[in-house]
Image 1 (tube, rainbow, N blue to C red):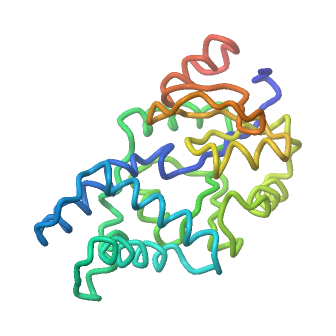
Image 2: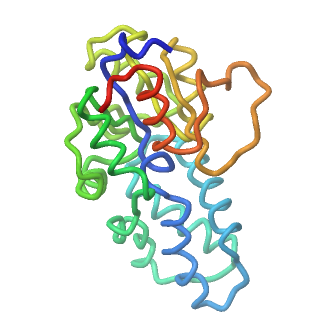
Length: 232
């Protein structure tokens, strides 16, 4: 990859910069355990993802409402009755959705050389909570709320590119989700990096192949340094 041509790095946020697997399970495990049901951490996150994908593929609603619907979905699956006011537990505790250990330092160093952008399936208000934890000023923040649709819709990426005013070869999209990010960015011929945070298996569908795979942001930073010498 020719890093000298790249002017901007865009990031998925939750799963890429924020460890949403740990954060969501840290919040929901004690919440559901109070009902004395057997629902381990792996099951909690798998059910969360299942509901998240289903709800985002339907009629648009804010991500705050999607998170509330996920909690209700999970309660129904467990056959337990919860106080309706508690369904907002995930958004009410959004400040507890914490970055991976390498996120903040990597972003600060990358910011020295590149413009940085967020393309995320989230609401503006929720991302403003997260932004304080990331400790860097993004040049662009593009949310699902602004577009009225959720990734993997190509509309989110097309709008992002229009705002950036850059050609595909000048951008590098960095993301953990093959489904939400790598596939649609491939369709639009963007450079992309799969940050395989959760050690998922290799892909076999060519549409799911990233340009590069790394285990974390620190590794991406090291590669850019070694191959380009751009970041001191």
